[in-house]
Length: 249
Image (cartoon, rainbow, N blue to C red; front, side, top):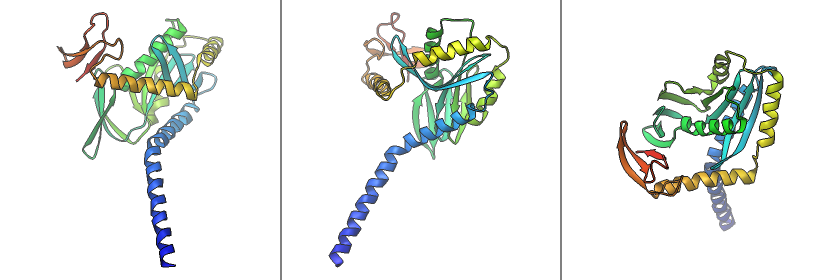
């Protein structure tokens, strides 16, 4: 009997360890989904006669795909929203290649979301082919963060200020309701979002990161070499000026 109880205790401990590992692995996914849900809820409060909200829009580009978290088509233009779910202190500048997250003195780095969202805007411009329609990129942080960033033109806000920022930018009508519907239908028809395509998209991002670590230009396959510029040292492609890829050190 004592041996049976001991075996049950051992198996219970093993099950608990497995559960903890599953939770640890799923935590970033759950946090990300929670942040996306919060932002979706906030955007749903925008007046329906002036704004139409689309989520998870994946567009084909010349270099692969571009994943847009949220797109708001409005009478005043189009808002492309990149959502980040982080905690702690976030520091960085508008032009730096990476930003820093600090939690209890532990630092980690991630790609400058302004640059990331810029590629989404370019994908939107390529699809629309209509320079008369302004496209406003916004980066929204959905986690419990303190933003200590230096930006001049870019819009980077905590999620609670997202709809307020959209309304502040909605200063002049640039289209009527029928044109809004046309653009929404175009986006829906062009959206290639699926589980399979999301995997391809993530794999491409990971391949780009690995190439950069290995000193290979992820854009053209050239060698990354150290250079010095006005704002300090950076890694640039050896095929410059044909390829202008840079990675700040």
